[in-house]
Image: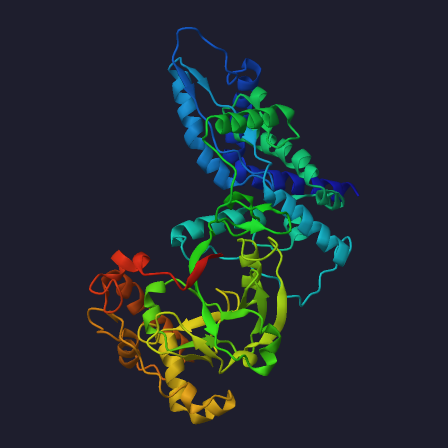
Length: 515
């Protein structure tokens, strides 16, 4: 036994020697760091004591949000303010760097709700299905720059580690897993994470006057009183007012969901569209007869209302789910349920926020409908199938301008060239064959029918050539907007970018915001 003990002691000594050799320099620096931090604490170096007659310097830092532990990104960014504060303090100035922790907004509430739903469905500890498909983090909106979107995604990954179950996110940060159910209460987040934030920043050596630290939300009556004073003062001075504006809104929480209030989707904002009223001509077919007392419209949403002069037809997704939604006393829009909900929250329903579906429909039910299209060269256009429509964008209904939209041209050409396709979708020749491309915009290098030219150039064979069609759109879309010249209408002869907003909108129903 004695021999074994000697061997054990020897091995322990070897382990210590290896540890010292490997981490000795680091450990020495940490020891110095801890000793200096202790001296700062005892001397109250960072506590702002006013010195009369000296200059003032105040540094602030955006309060880190307390839906998780702080990460290295906070440490990197915060040093800019911290170094400046130290510099001004060394100059003898009244230098103050207070700090606080942000707890207001929707992300904590959303995370608490998500955790509650997970525990109710899967128990505690949760037994998640192994083969479950977990929804990935939503990318930033198209209008967000690539670098900005990348930064926001990195910020989210820094806190979540790329994990998407709320339970798993917390489990990566919390040693005592028995505490996790308490996070279904949003106020527990306020109690748990801020003390860790302060402790970690103290260990980081941050030059902060911690006497002034606080958290936001009405849990802190002092901060709550400050915010009330601030907003009331701004209102008294007519700097803020109450009203409606395009914004991302949460029907579940019944409030606006600002950029930093979201668990995911920072940078996503409302996209403005114009809804075009394509009236279904009378008499209505038998399967729509219940709508006979209303003006019935297919209602596509477009970003380019100035191109409506070139309409040849309207597109729907044959297997898509649509509905006839009453938007006021006299009018019915045939659109997707998602877009109907959006419109209902934009004052286009009889009761704000509530949809009124008079009839559920499939895209098949809409094929071949005769329509009156505003500004079109044709008295009647028809509803045709487009297999690439996304029901999650716009209204699920697409107006067709094959002169300038490669997707529209490819789909119309397919139907013209393939009798079997027309037969499959119960379309007569009269609904398709007479409709030719209508030149409306002259684009340098592509002429007055840019979609035709670019489809020929890229040898696009059908509407299923998705990659080539995406490239074609990139080639002509922005060039048409910024360099194209209108050939028709009251703004003929002018560049599209200079006059598109002046195109008459008598038949265009409304601005529609979509995210």
